[in-house]
Image (cartoon, rainbow, N blue to C red; front, side, top):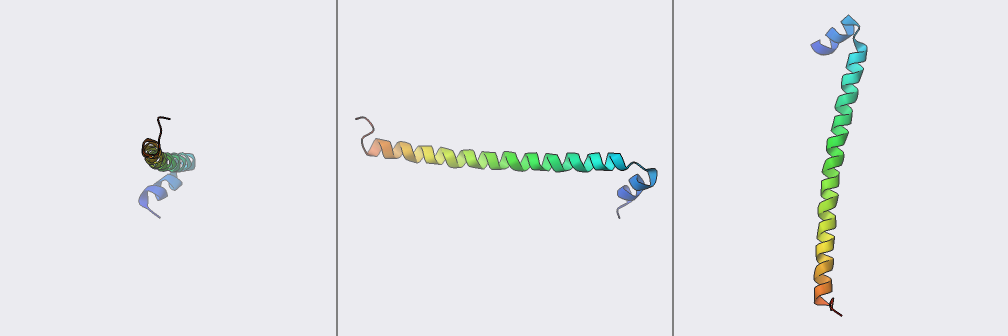
Length: 62
């Protein structure tokens, strides 16, 4: 066990350790979900751009 974890367990500060683990886990999930959302927005932007090219090429003004 690491020195930090051992020190927390010896002092009986288990609630702080649990809160820290929860906070780091939820922050990691937030970063991951924002990264995935940005990737989805880029894919959607590419789709809309290709749809616009298609409409211009095959008579979008009719």
